[in-house]
Length: 572
Image 1 (tube, rainbow, N blue to C red):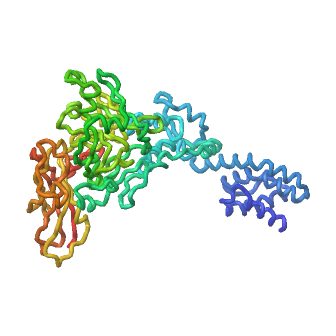
Image 2: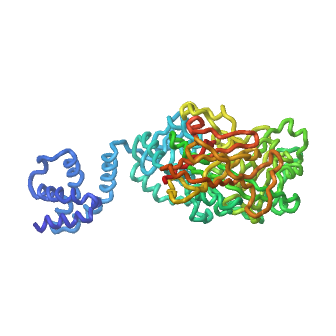
Image 3: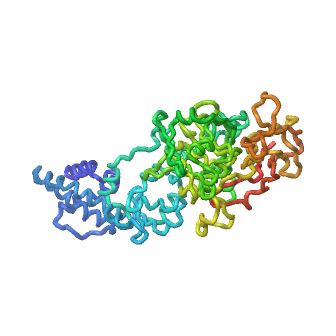
């Protein structure tokens, strides 16, 4: 009995303490067998026999030491503890997954489509060769080939979603060896997002790393100009910290050679120009497309759009100073922007716009260094960003580091393989990103900011007030917003507002230069006979473009360009 108690006491310090309930009876059985002359026989299943075979040497040493009173024998048994523990870990690893064990050296051999593309993630080994062609990020996934996904997913944290992990699990082929897992755990990778700026807690976060967030919708219509703290945040990579004293902007591709400008040069060598312009993410209102059929992308609500006053040098003036002449347009068709935000490979965010937009006096493209009368905040591109009014937010490159006049579009992933629209019938097996143009001007848009969907309206009220925003790309002015309280059966025209309240009579912007949104509002008699209000809005611009009535016909696999009638249901 004393011997058995000693065995159980030792079990508390065994490496399989987490399996304590299994160890105790086995230890007892082991003690009985070691004290008998028979070393084999007996019943028990395969797992039990395997366990006894694996553990018998350690307990034999321990019991022999106790019986003989010899600490030397016991010490010898404990000396082999580490090697046996590793052997047990490997067997447990195999038992847990039923898959083979691979070393990191074996994984590293699979780094190409010819030899297979293998990666590791949290101790698992995955053969993703077949998935490479379907990867939304293109062949950038090959950068992780033969190694761990964790450093890349720390940067592109949008991957840390359940459906992504489910896709990855389908390609699992094995387990990484215990030794190599320990090596990976020993390497501490720094968080590239650790120095991101603080954000206002009222924002609804769609992604933490990189940070992407939108304000509560009702905030949008509280102010014609959106405070920078509430302006939606759309980052693709970690926020770079740029020293304004050493900042330099390179302008390349023109006959005059490379022009390098400091922040002070932009402020003193070129006239300061100010515009009020709305920026909208291509994925604004993507959540409504997700309700029709799942798409890939951040689940934006209706508030990935904001309006601000921007100040800076005109891009046109800078290009003229760099040597632009009318004959350049005979060969140059694009102006490329390159940001200072980078991924782990040094690849920067990039985009481009047509050169006629860049050089036009009416284009109003800015190299902006002020937002709402102050230095541009870090999240919005400090010290300098491109502001391309009337164009999708993705082309308004932040933390601008380089401008290139070119015959070609930007080769950036975000220009070539993202932010493009496709037919509802196109899926990820058939999509050809080269077949569609990059989004530039956005279509007519409107949405209801108050009341919120699902909000209860008191039946005792005599009237109901509905508010929202409307905007159209390409400088086309919003000329009308229609609102219905009964799902589109009857309509009323909302009152539009194109400036801050109390600023005096409004004047229409010059044709083709209506860069800012219109806020709208309507107060209508409350329909007491209704048990539920289905509030709908739709806008019309100066070219008489109107919104489609439903989402299904405009659904696309990336969930961009979502501009169907906006609908809100409120119980009464």
